[in-house]
Image 1: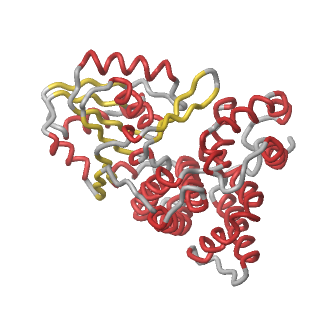
Image 2: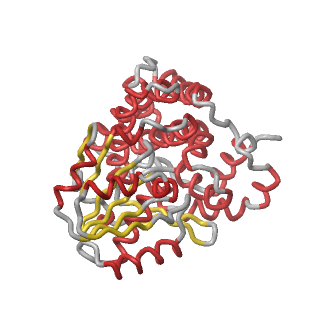
Image 3: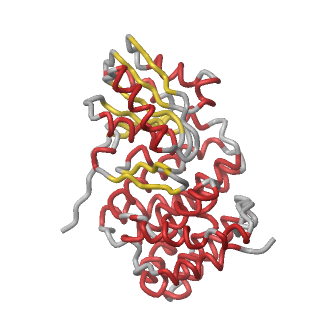
Length: 360
């Protein structure tokens, strides 16, 4: 049996944020970060809803904590919203989704991503941090009612953010395609998301704004795929490392993914080969196609000027080794390990950690 859940309504295009008015909301609670609050974007988006009363929660920071979500939940309950809007990247969306979940109300939730990476606008995941450990919250009720992909919000993305978020799309699509929960519907989404993102990311990084909606849509498709199929070891390790060292999530995925592909290849080689061919990377023999896929990831990482090792990302080897036990334990406890195509054991996490640590 193959099952695919498509709960979230997706609206994509230029100026689509105006569709907030469709809800006829009276009390709007908007969750965002200080940047969008201070530059006026949050207020402009809120105006599109034509609500009678608006409250903006502008305090979201990268790697939102359980405490921040609890603070927002209390304010949400006190305000009594009938529409909750998340505006920003994965952190803002995850925080807003968690707040709506814990508030246990009946307000509609709309996610408006401003970066092309997390896919949180369509997933049943929310990542919160507690005591330097990232904890994935997974529940079908976390899926937003609507996702608005407005290309007008993508015009000012800096290259570094395009790269970090973009490699997250690549990682989501690739891991979903080989995950244990993959099926025909998630495969089609993951395959197209990988192909589109791989093709368009270098141009977006170079400043070609006309391709950014394509990457944005790929991020959403990848989110739909992994929400159904699951992820894998790359994300489990990125969550563990990110909780300790606070390096951007997509950057960690870029460092980890080639090594994870190398380890998983003996059980997932056939599907890796399919993905390579779908992306135009060739390889008639499975081993050649897998090699082409891994080399393509290495090339893309260089094109996007992303670090190859943790040391290049500013994490000193001595700090990695001092935290190894904590990182390994957090990785093994991460739910993403359960959907990795091969069973994840301690030695495998340690092996990859050794490969990616690098030297100063």
